[in-house]
Every structure is written in structure tokens, then in C-alpha cells.
Image (cartoon, rainbow, N blue to C red; front, side, top):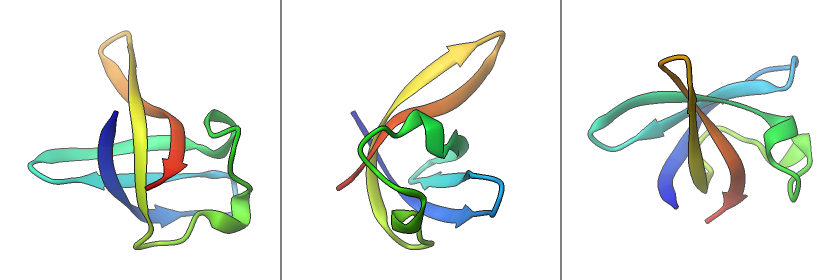
Length: 65
């Protein structure tokens, strides 16, 4: 699992996670079965897996660290 910090999270259910030494990565709340949208706040530390398709990466299985 990778570690990061939620950079931002919007009303549409998606946001970005900051990773040390790596580009920010996109995520959607539907890819996080254990968390509700109210738990996605900027600055919250998270653990996640990376799913890559067609050359684009996104965070999945996002969990509070």
C-alpha cells in the first residue's frame, strides 16, 4: 500500500492525494468502500493502492492511515 495525504476533495465525490516525491493521484469516493464522503478532508493521511489503466493511474481502496 502507498501512503499520502488528501490534497482536496470536492462535492462531486472525487479529489486528489498528495504523495511524497510523486505526482498527485486522482481518487473517487466509490473506490473507498470503508469510508464515507464526510471522512475525506484535506490534510487527512491515507493508505491506498494504485490502479493503472490506459497509462493513467488512480488511487483505489483508500483508507485512513
